[in-house]
Image 1 (cartoon, rainbow, N blue to C red):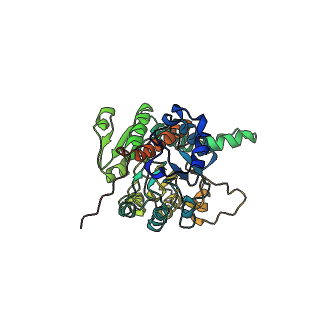
Image 2 (cartoon, rainbow, N blue to C red; image 1 turned 60 degrees about the horizontal axis):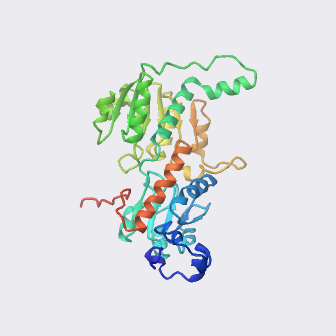
Image 3 (tube, rainbow, N blue to C red; image 1 turned 90 degrees about the vertical axis):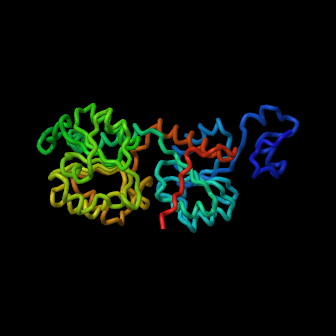
Length: 373
């Protein structure tokens, strides 16, 4: 009878077989055929909602799941000993030293339960022959709709109105907004999320400008006007960022680019925090060049987001300065956070791992491209 485990576990002791399947005399053929393979997976930075959705999705795959609340870094990498795959999130540290530790401990696959991979040293992973897989598209609607939530909240001041009414203050002074219909919105990044955002904005009656290094033919179909960055900055009432973090987009929004924007611009970022130079944005807010700022990401969010810090003194002075503006709205990297997205993330991640275990093509592998000499 063939062993149902992956090749890395062929020498599994009988005690582990019994733990997985029960005693030998109760084995059924279905016990061997329910799951084509099993892999030990260690999850870092896991929250209760991660555990819920991954456990539910794992009913289809049957992997061995170990959930850790601690983030992955040089101090915690040892906790993955014995795992064939490690699953990480956006703020985990996956640099060369960490990858070497994981490889030495037997980890063969790095699975990201997110789309971005700027926190992974792809060169080091390639040198260790450790594939990196991701979830390129889980629910673009989740992020796009959160983008609109930030825009609408900042524009119509619904968060401030909510607090006023609860206190018996029904005055409208300071709550005036503007019609989105007829406004010009510039989208930087026209991937899946950017295009969904464009469609929603077109539904509001907005004029949509777009910039992308590789725009799709769909742009013309839905009426997105492709332009260069300088023209987008100069014409847009609202600018929303949907591009990945790369060396080229790091601090794309800086003092120079802000100076090219319209006075009173609204700036939205649901992509990656380091695309914005926070100090430059603070200057823009103080000069009123930027009239509204909506952020779901922050460059130094690794020390802040996904944790309850309400009983502590936050030490990040830049972040606290941003919070001091009444025209700034910050959410804690929650744009992705819908039931639909979490279901997709769990299923795609486990499918990626199963494909690796079974020696199939990794359709969601992150390619490592060597820089030209």
